[in-house]
Amino acid sequence: MTAAVKTMISSGTAVGEGEGATAVKVVSSLSKKMAEPGGLTVAAIERRSYERLLSHKQEAMQSVERAVSELEARTAGDMAVADAELYRITSQMLDLAGFFDTGPLYEAGYSLCELLDVMQGKQGWSPEAIRVHVRALRLILKDHCQPTSHSAALLEGLRAVLEHARKA
Image (tube, rainbow, N blue to C red; front, side, top):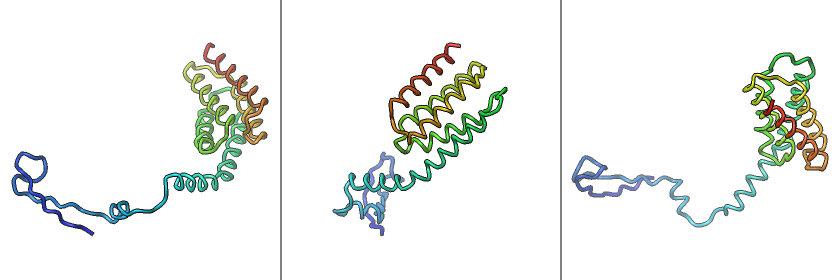
């Protein structure tokens, strides 16, 4: 596994204790395998990785669905005080959604996180602005996260809500 290579080190170098020191080069099994010809191409590795990632999409989207349901439940009441869990739930949802092509869903979730940041920074709380975002998430999910004219209109509305919150 190791092949000793004797190297004479001259004085004044950073390696060894001075003149006459011996350096040993360790050759690992990984470096041997990497030096051998053959193996997979980068394109094949990328394809396999993508296929394995897609095998988790259904489970991930079920988690996204649960997150949206939890957001709906938390925003159903009067929401008189800020709920820090909204940001946590939304950001965890985005962590999953970001691995897959969720198009408008990701953008709407990101907008909700930005809205919650703005509200926290301004010490302002707008339950209706939050509910609009959560409803948009649900509608986009119903459309299977596909970019449509409907989702484009929703995202345009969310951008307007966010801009209004920034100016308030």
